[in-house]
Image (cartoon, rainbow, N blue to C red; front, side, top):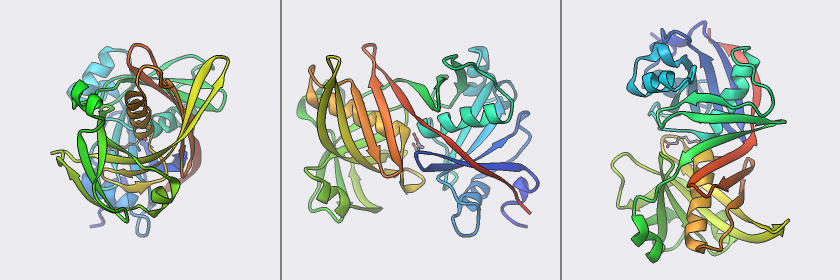
Length: 303
Ligand SMILES: N[C@@H](CCC[C@H](N)C(=O)O)C(=O)O
């Protein structure tokens, strides 16, 4: 039997958010049994539809997991059941959250006015998503630096070895709440030289793996008295390989650059990724707000 059998006849939608691409489906009553092998087969770029991950929109009240029950209690009607391309689960996906909101509107399942917040349940907690024109802003909640203040003082708490780059590079771990390791490189030549598949080593190796962002800061501009930083980023995603964007990764990068830059560092960051541009604002109370576009591409039904 085909690995894709559980998805036969289910309407699927393909879309992307700054070219981080996903397949989405609606399973309101949590009836579908989509295992890791089916997700991997679906996300396969040659034998499947191809995507960096799968988003199953489920009614929070129907899912039955502790996170979904908590989401239902907090008033989030819809839950983002997110899987990476290899079928593994992740706590959060910032790009998928924006695409899911666009999809739910397109499917007629939510109808928020411009600026009206929508609550979405995720394994990492309930998130608020708000449309402003063609963009969506996701309140990504609080970040954490698992290495604590010591790591910020030292500037690093993880060593990353990337194929194509000499030696081992120092990075900072950021929890968003999925795991990230952010490594700053001296110039764009190094950024281009990195071969992110495969990633050679992360030390200490996190038990549940990590996403790795390599970045080159591009400087700051000041508008109306507020400094905005710009940074170019490439990412290797846990469970997906190198992707063209990562929303939680962009937030982790802004957090790391702010930590490295100290009190005077910008709280607003333009994060340039291969698939476009994201905007991250770090709030005074320790949350990250992620803004960017999301695009639905088409529908398909598996044979
Ligand atoms: N692309 C996503 C992150 C998806 C999850 C990640 N690969 C993980 O396993 O933590 C984003 O936009 O945040």
